[in-house]
Amino acid sequence: MRKIIRIGTRDSELALWQAHTVERQLNALGYGTEIVAVKSTGDLILDVPLYELGITGIFTKTLDVAMIRGEVDIAVHSMKDVPTALPKGIVQAAVLERANVNDLLVHKGSTEFFTNPATIATGSLRRQAQWLNRYPHHNVTDLRGNVNTRLQKLKDNDWQGAIFAAAGLERINLLPENHMALEWMIPAPAQGAMVVVAMENDAYCREALAHLNHKPTEITTHIERQFLKKLEGGCTAPIGALATYIDEEIRFEGVLLSIDGTEKLHIEKVLHADSDHANFGNECAEEIQKNGGAELMEKIRNQLKK
Image 1: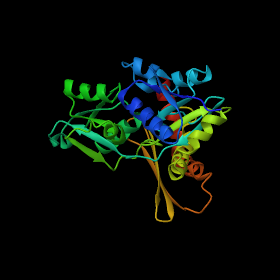
Image 2: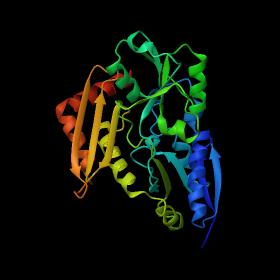
Image 3: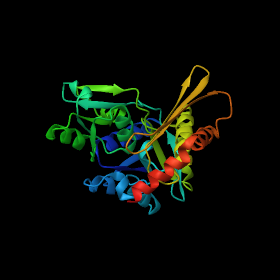
């Protein structure tokens, strides 16, 4: 039985770009599709930092509900926004080939602020902690909203810069002239990757989406998200992770920091590409935990409860 696949997405410009990308790929394979856009809680509440809302997967929850209710068949997400544990009945059906993994700084032309006091904007604890670790003389302020909203807020405020995911700006052609790649900053697990989820019992959609899956990206993002899940334990924390295929190896780099950036635990490990990678992320996380990560995570949990 052929059916129209209803693609659920947030209604931001970037989210719609991602949904239309999946739609084009499915259409090219002969599948009929329809875009269904909804507004998420994360887009509606812009005056509170994400970690203070205490909701796991705030950008995905609305679409999860729509899928379970049968209002949409599949949903497209920035993979870094998706909780490591999916709701019951919903499964990962495809990971698309990864784009640029880097964070970048959008600034206002002058870069003298690097050596002077400055205010940098970001809504991410991970970016905040890594920035303060490198530039402890700076102040970090919260920045929320979709990509367009955040760029406008940077223009409207006297901040010296704001941090964005490169992939998001590149995908919708909003990369400003005044920017620099932060290649030293370890990205969020699965940053730059798009994931499509479906209902576990929907064999038609799962079979369709299997054609879109990019195996190397699926493997590296699995390692990164496994590292995150093992460390995090359901708590938002400043955690970065990146796994990459280089020659015949999978190279992993991970980091856990205190919220203020004063403490930093870092790991680099290499695995042969032919080795069993199923537990690699867990092994890296366990090494961090043994080297002070368990105590640091407990401190972070206590700070976020206040």
